[in-house]
Image (cartoon, rainbow, N blue to C red; front, top):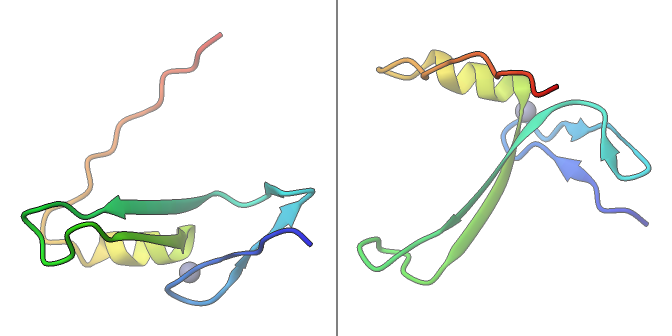
Length: 72
Ligand SMILES: [Zn+2]
C-alpha cells in the first residue's frame, strides 16, 4: 500500500496515481538546530495549495514570487 499524502492543515488527501501526486503541494521538512528549543528534532508537514494560499494571505510581509524560467 502506498503512503498517503495528507495536508496537515485541513486533512485533505493529495490525490496520487501510482505514487505520483496529481495535485501540487508543499512538503516542509525542518531539522531544528542548536539555537532552537527543539535541537536535534526533525519535523515534517505537508500543506495543500489551498492551505498554502490561506497561510500566505495572513502574512505581514508578502511571499516573494518570481516566474520559473523554463529549461528547454
Ligand atoms: Zn490543506
